[in-house]
Image (cartoon, rainbow over all chains, first blue to last red; front, side, top):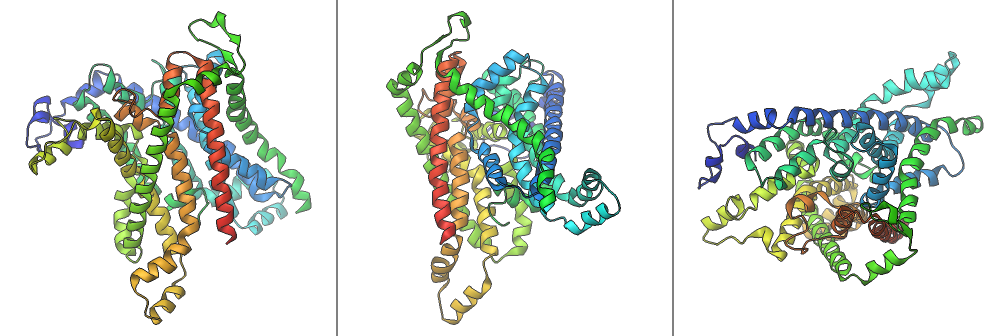
Length: 246
Length: 288
């Protein structure tokens, strides 16, 4: 695909296929300047960052609660939260669409972000519980002795110590939003269309435009590749939500 | 500890309230909608029809067909992924150095935007332009029109899904194998066990729990898969590769939100049932 993106229409049809050609960046120019690609890129980015922030704040608070306080039914609540991950997303499409319609949030960033935060939150909470559990309580208790409130201890002591884990969690949330297609297809429109929708659009609207499609797809992959490489070591844990000791 | 118990509430409330509002409320709402005949184009004609949407679905042969498609895809993809993932995990079990090197490459398919991988594969399977048929021709075979043949379109979908998620199986099973206590294998070695015997009698039984978990997660995901169907075949040719999810999307596309919600609710019940069965299995596995 990388090679398709730098070929001319003609070279794409030449057989035998040439893996290496003099790159022609026409398709990139077309994608970048004729389609409002940068706008779509920005849309994707805004939604993904919004999702990450939302899921991290809500997730960190809840995860800290689960990690530090024992209460009756805690295990059940945790389990129910995990179960929401199992819900087939298509089951949420109709009610979301109608809710966003009523709230006037169709084709807005907020509408998409709300949906994505709810998808990301269960695994954010679960991953973070693990990371907070690893921060020794003694350190916090020392902070209490020094007169810190619990929230200050959380903000100034626990969060920095758990930071590497939180970054990993954030990357997972970002990728979830960056890659999501179904809800983007349904909830977004002219103003908030995200990249997966744009790429799928190359497929259907005017017949497949393979060069442009490949160029766009390559551009979409760049952030994914960088973030995936950053995730590497933590991947197993994220994938299984702590169900398996990774 | 006792004094802490009460303090937990303020921390948990925001997240849980959010999930209740944005996750559970829509699910309940979907059940309510499913009892109505509700067509988006004619909102004024919306009226309560109780279970008629469900009856209409039950009478629709398309639903049976799509359920079979979903099940075929799920079974094909998950079993291929499990076997390939297990093989890779065993091969790389003792080779930590190489594993560290290949890991970044292996991870990528997992995180590439599904729509992008679908697009890529669509290009590869193109009857005239695609490299799959080009190389088949090179070895003297006339490549079939992959995506316009019902059976082969399903094969292409399973292959794409396998390409994307074998890494998942591999990584999870690899983590499981690496954490197995070496003492067992040392003892077996002393007793003169062959590598195959060790695999069959030690590695596999110890890996069972993790395998069940991994298959559980993958089966659920395969059942819910939507993106690659949309991009690679759009359920076609005809409706040959239309899954329950695609059917649901199609009904929603007609604006029949009542009927679509009924199907959503059915899907939800089905998935809940599947999860329960799998969780039972899991509980039994971890008990032994």
